[in-house]
Image (cartoon, rainbow, N blue to C red; front, side, top):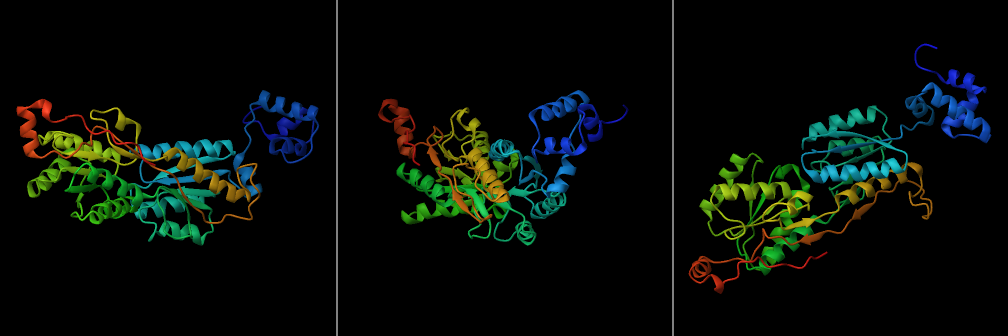
Length: 372
């Protein structure tokens, strides 16, 4: 035999008809245990690879779920993808991945490519769920889909995420409890991230409700020198800012590095808080105070939600069948994780006193109990 083995070759070696081989490979009909074993042995002996594309054309399903995220540089997306892949694999699906680099045009172009490959469903994070051509296309084509990290604010799209406003408000409350009165919010791609906007809104609300000035917004670049220049200008204009809230943990870590380059100590001079709870944030010094979010669980939940819509029933075998894919909003719990990058506000007078009488002022950051 030359070339790739065919289903006809498998049938001849197994001593049966092509229809029998097809039933065994597709699990689509009754076959005796003996005949099934013969077919499986023939497949293994010949190294036969079943044509998944051919099966998808017959069943009108590709058994593939598309995943579109902005980037893999931020570990939160990588964690979510691992959760998606775990759940999809358990349910017999593969995933196809595309990154959009926070670009709305790239989101639409990538989605068109994915739909052309006849994926069964899509899990995605978009720049702006309120004005998204990508989401419009999914709705127009009736493609089952679910947002992760985004919350669309309506019931037209299923979504899995955390309450960013509530989480950021909690961060602001923690800072105020520690006597911080002047703060700033630091973000990259602010105008193309509904997550950053929601976090800034919640952060401002906490300070506003306490009668304090709303935190300023600092839009920066991840590049170290650009970040240093931006922060230097901020502290030159308002040297009394005592705490920074970064829109994600990677940016918070970059802020700590930039502050050190500017000669500022963390947390003695400026405290820093992040958002996401990535693993590396607990391995640096000082370890990062942050909002921990269940990224892997987001991915698993979204995958199960999309696939249960495709099959017309819940992926939970104990749950009743569902009539179809209804848009669903799922909000998962978050947790504030205290860290040494956030300390009580200390005035210059207190610092001078500490320098003269070290035992008079505590230098250990306050340990804040974790809050759901």
